[in-house]
Length: 109
Image 1 (cartoon, rainbow, N blue to C red):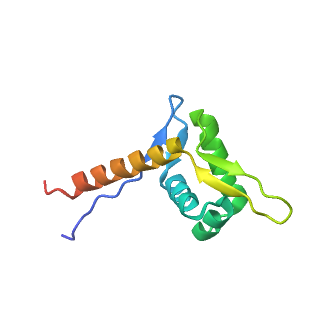
Image 2 (cartoon, rainbow, N blue to C red; image 1 turned 30 degrees about the horizontal axis):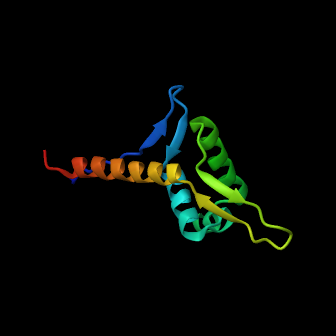
């Protein structure tokens, strides 16, 4: 018999069972925190700026909380983005939960 492993996908849902947060949005927020730019973060992850902005906006609407503070630039650019403390906490808790599940799944039965 070949070796078998467990795989899982984790996401956070609200009381309406609507998906709010998962690995993709966690990665996006991590990149925004590094690059201070939604555009640069989306490029790094191979997604369009429009899609990245949609993901952030939808999650913020469903959470009722701001995840990213956006400062618009002028005609020459110069805008920036910062992940809010709430957004950072959400990413941290999500990653900790992922790690806990991964550790549990790796334990011998």
